[in-house]
Amino acid sequence: MKYKEYKPQWTTKNTEEDTYRTMFRWGNPNYVNEPTEQFYNFVKEKLALSDEDFMIPTSQGENLIELDIPIKLSKTHIREFEDIVGKINVATDTLSRVKACYSRGVLDNMRLREEIVENVPDAVISPTSEEQLLMIVKYCYKNNIPIYVMGGGTNITRSNESVRGGIKIDLKRNFNKVLSFSAIDQTVTVMAGITGPQLEEILNNANEYFTNVTGRYTVGHIPESFEFSTIGGWVASRSVGQNSMRYGGIDDILLSARYITPRGVMETDVCTRDGCIPAIDEIMLGSEGKFGILVSCTLKVRKYTYENKKAFSYMFKNWETAVSCARELLQREICEISFMRVCDNGSTEIISKMSSIVSKGILGLRIRGENEKNKCLIIGYTEGDKAFASHNRRAIGRLCTRFGGISATSYLNKKWDKTRFSDAYIRDILQDYSIVIDKFVCPLRWSELQEVYPIVVDYFNDIGVLSMVHLQDMSTYGAQMVISYARKYSSLKEYKDFHNDTLDMLITAGVKCPHSYSLGRTNDRTIYNLDEVYLSIMKSIKKQFDAKNILNP
Image (cartoon, rainbow, N blue to C red):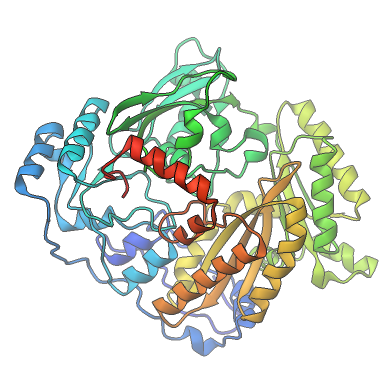
């Protein structure tokens, strides 16, 4: 990629296997998303940096992992696990254990660059059956051995660390199959370790995998970690996908589940709406493995209609107008939207820089004489039956135009569709120069959004941090406000202090439970903002399932 002016020596070479960098690189360790010159200049301007700040990279984590971390579990325990699952499915070498405890979060990234390794399990175990997993849990409960579970390892909240040692259960290796599919019921039953792409490949081509099945299907759940995350991880973190406005979050898609707990196997029933008893799945969802280990679950599927999708993007003169238009689209119920984002000025500007374009929507604002500095973008698409999707698209266009929106180029939609999973890779390159990119997610009602948004913008402006806000997973009553930010740091402590101060600011501003797509250890201070009655009930449930606290302690 050519630059007209100075170009930093971005690290674009393939990452060597078994280096620290392979562990914190996002997703594919051999993929690199190099910043454009426009984006590079934008970051420099907003963070008050110069070319000199990009001449010498900081630690890039290119050293090999050459450690010898002692195993604290006795040989007797290790042999018992080997007898249960076979020696080939028990890894006790240091490299396997280290790789099993780090994920893709900023703090993982920063510590590994400094070769800080901590919270390592004593063994990584890959059971091949539910019976084996039950035997492992019973043995660990009897002998007070902590158990942590890993799937795709994509979490960004330090959820993957074995704080008390013990064992790490790897479900991705062997628990990755579709168990059954019903076209009549439109359901699929899967093992917890199957990834999103694996499941979608089978459902999208159901006629090739199942007998007496025609047509194409989808679960429709597309989180940002879709390429590498597992269904078990979705349930454990109560995941919300990019298309959740049409398909729902994983809590809407999940019909039943099967868990291994210290008290035995627990299975919830598939039902349409059972009003007789409380739903145990509501307790298990989002519990991050503290109550039980998910081994399989049944999900809703829908007809695959992605080929009928109709894209839309509109530029508005300011944030207030764009938000009002989005809320009206949902509350008037004139259409069904699959995906929609409302981007504030900062987010809109960065989309323009990363796309290397000035859309016709911005040109339209100029022609009308409106201040383009406050421009805000609404981007999304609708899908379904072809006629239904076309109807939705027309309804969206009429309402956006009524709010003063100007249709932007379809290139924005195509660009987003193409890069929605690859933009995350830019963070690795920028962090080579001590620039952090991360985000906070804030569930809010529409009325709360009006009060919280200006507080957030002022906070980041006051401390000189580049922030970009967008709304996603919108409904008639509220939305998720996602705050992405970029800042330069000088130390690990400086970043931790900033992160905790920002969490405190969000809680003070009225955000009930700010997070980063799960709590983990990074956002655990959020828990203490919850009601005491709620916390006491959760503690009681934990005691009933796992009195010795061996599951994700």
